[in-house]
Length: 133
Image 1 (tube, rainbow, N blue to C red):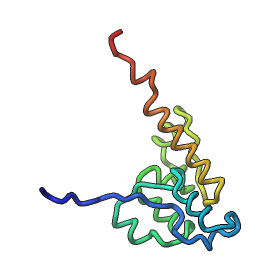
Image 2: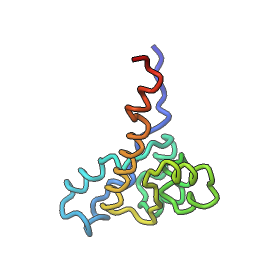
Image 3: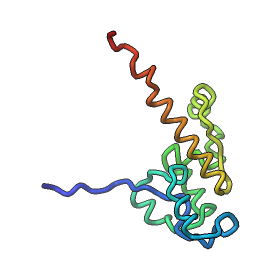
């Protein structure tokens, strides 16, 4: 049996430093619970995650621009000269927006974005189209 090599990892947008977020969290446990919510996660190449994982959000943000579209969409430049993405957002309506900083409310909004995308991808009406009745 051959070992599979992990090419991607789940990236926490917030590094594991609760002391950086004392303006919004009184306890490290509350920070840790929020940090693990879907809105605070990305799927990135393992090498990227290993090299940038401990930086602050503001330090990682320019590097996210070089990654997949979900990561790129955190950066304001993703919304410039990106006609395919902008057309998708306009046509489909998911609540994409850039985040120059990433606070608790931003993590919640990002979670809502992921839910919106999941609802579009796995829309039961679309899944049943073409199925004989």
